[in-house]
Length: 80
Image (cartoon, rainbow, N blue to C red; front, side, top):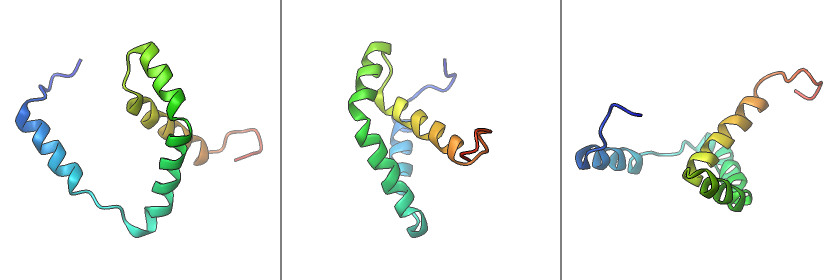
């Protein structure tokens, strides 16, 4: 469990920081691809999230991280 309390002030700060985020033009295609991947698997993330009582957005984020790891390292099976 986190030792940081999500106070209204901290939540506001997180929202402000997120709203200030800007996608760099050279990363736009990668962001679009990741969003498309999440949307394709959206129903699956929601189903698993409900079963495990985990937000589907958390599962989607981990899924994208997992995919990024496998795309950026040698898998040992000749495909990477």
